[in-house]
Image (cartoon, rainbow, N blue to C red; front, side, top):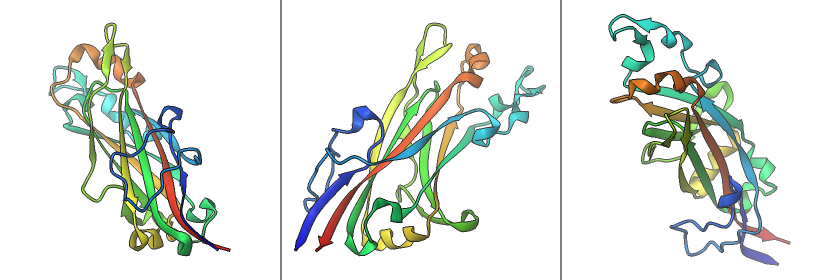
Length: 211
């Protein structure tokens, strides 16, 4: 027996579990009851996120502000483990995988966000979004800026058979969020070490199972 269009939604935040993608191939049957989150990470201006902490040193060229203030872009990285085989289906059964990428921007800056599938020795196998990084608006200030109401952006990427095959060699997904650092409000500088970015990822499978 062949079951076509059997789907599993690997989603991210609980609030996203029922949300249907804006653009979905007609062949895929949407079934939000089957959810398989892949994981996520929290990024901040710290060494764990790959941030150069020496940029907190004062820079005499920018009236004794931290050196990071003079940088146009500040990249932050995070990652999760990824194993295509753990999705409990062989690649021959996978017609498509819809990856759902959600980012919560807790900085008062625009972000550029991208995901990369990495293999051994951090070799880049594929990008999440072939058209380039997605844009994320700034979070909204609360009070005098101590905390931020995060801006949320969810973006889907559909992988067909030609892109699924190489993912067998992927062992992790690297998240990269670039803080666009223009026209910064200097009164907010003391709060930047506490701002964070949350990234989550899941996927939906379109399978054909043979019994």
